[in-house]
Image 1 (cartoon, rainbow, N blue to C red):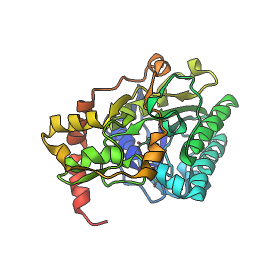
Image 2 (image 1 turned 180 degrees about the vertical axis):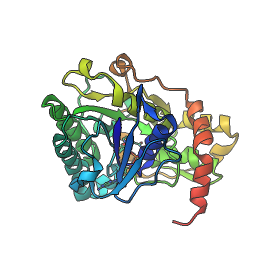
Image 3 (image 1 turned 180 degrees about the horizontal axis):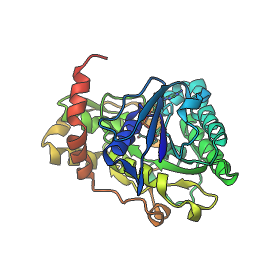
Image 4 (image 1 turned 120 degrees about the vertical axis):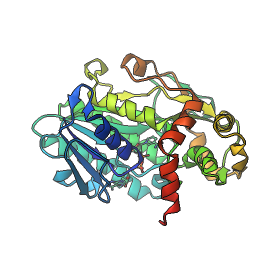
Length: 327
Ligand SMILES: NC(=O)c1ccc[n+]([C@@H]2O[C@H](COP(=O)([O-])OP(=O)(O)OC[C@H]3O[C@@H](n4cnc5c(N)ncnc54)[C@H](O)[C@@H]3O)[C@@H](O)[C@H]2O)c1
């Protein structure tokens, strides 16, 4: 299988690349080539048993080398994330909307339609703190990022119907714990309140302790993306979008899980209200009833405490090293 990862230098892009390099396969097929594309040349995964090509460029003006002619699977993860897309409307629209459009155009030029795995978001829904959404809930986003993601899903579903490509869009929960440095996502604090105390650093909590959020671990997000790349899309029909089986957690429960792994660590979390952040994340639904995802074979989520332990096992040391270096 020849695979391209757009946004291959980002958090999830690097994790997917590392997993492909480790497994050497996707589903029951061997990976024969990997192209990583991002604004800057992405780092290669370690010890890949297949050739890795790295390409730099803008997804809104996608160079041909980003999706080479024989590509079987495209992971379209390149995006401007939530708070940044809200702060800079033109940038978000160009990357998130025109970028997805140019991915469709690039796929149309291939000799056979590739599988396209698109990362949509829980932010494409409204509903707020009391919402538990069914699979057929309408997307009524309360921010530009969510709107751009919802439009991307529709464009990809239509392109699938036309036979240009074969899309699966996953509406990812807030992926927690994000390694490295805080980022420009409105939900950055959700990871921050676990990651920073585990590094021995203070963290700010802009919402209340009973604030609930729909989350998933990076491990599970990668499992879902890989499953989406190989599942039979026949049963999906015209609806190419999936609400995956994340978990609904309150801040209090997350801090409890943190203390279970590192007793007393939650004392480093300071309550500093931020109405702008609370406004964006407060509109996102806190839970889903993801029946369709289970039927389609998406893996169930592990308990909250496992999510904290997985960060310690997978990313804590690398994050410590990254944070110790300048930049
Ligand atoms: N991490 C989450 O909690 C989460 C939740 C829901 C959805 N998503 C979606 O999953 C995908 C991956 O998320 P992530 O957390 O890895 O984000 P990330 O910001 O780490 O990765 C996105 C990558 O896109 C690249 N990019 C931005 N503009 C670009 C452009 N013009 N041309 C080429 N590349 C460009 C960035 O450089 C970055 O490496 C994104 O589409 C995001 O919207 C993430």
